[in-house]
Length: 93
Image (cartoon, rainbow, N blue to C red; front, side, top):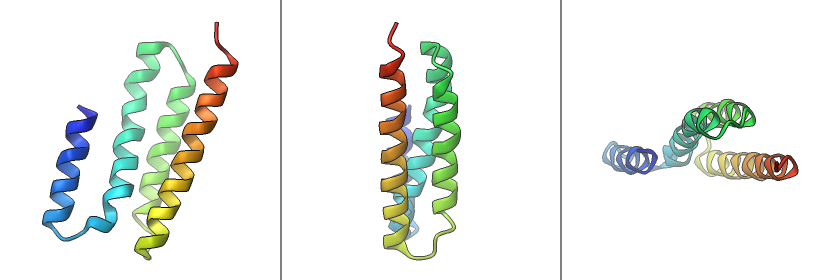
């Protein structure tokens, strides 16, 4: 479902001539996908990742400069995913 949502978002944003918002919307979609993963895998940290991921995507929608928006999303979300990975790996059962 996540892939389909991203695919449709890319098509829709290109159709309305707003490809500069693609990274922010993908961040929102990926952030949302962490909520079901949290309960599926029993990893409460994924709730935090989902909240922060959605916050990053939402914040980026208000950044006026397209290049800065993409950089904010890429660097922030990338860092969030690395931190999440490090925390999950440090608590392997």
